[in-house]
Length: 178
Image (cartoon, rainbow, N blue to C red; front, side):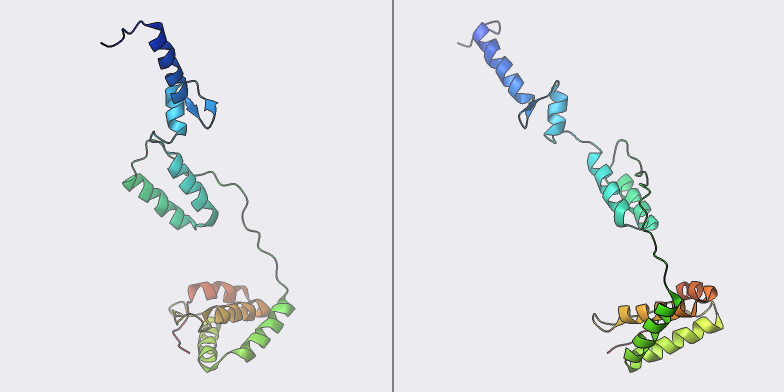
């Protein structure tokens, strides 16, 4: 036969069990809801807030908006907002035109035949300032794409032509293989 609910020994056991349910990591919470939340048993938007906060540190604005839209569309958050910018933007260091020119000369002399052909094509296009020219730099890993980009940037910075710098961003690069 079961014990009646008003039996004092049952209540004492029940009280200890209920206290145990409110305990998470040796901390006793005031409510079961708080304890369940800290045990990660309740759905919350905390995961999405963490995701957006982390993404805001390394994603570009368009990617951050896409991540936000993805969360809204597929994760069904109850209440979520974009993270507030921290104001810790990456500070661009000024460059020395003479150092950049010297760096460009050294890098240009190290370009292989294919890289040099691409370099000359792009610098001609930048000099002509033809906005319809588009180039795409493609090649296997280790073929020198980043080296070529760095060479182009040093060359442009060394020549310090504002229109040439902005023109580089309108032109991409050509394909080459080593």
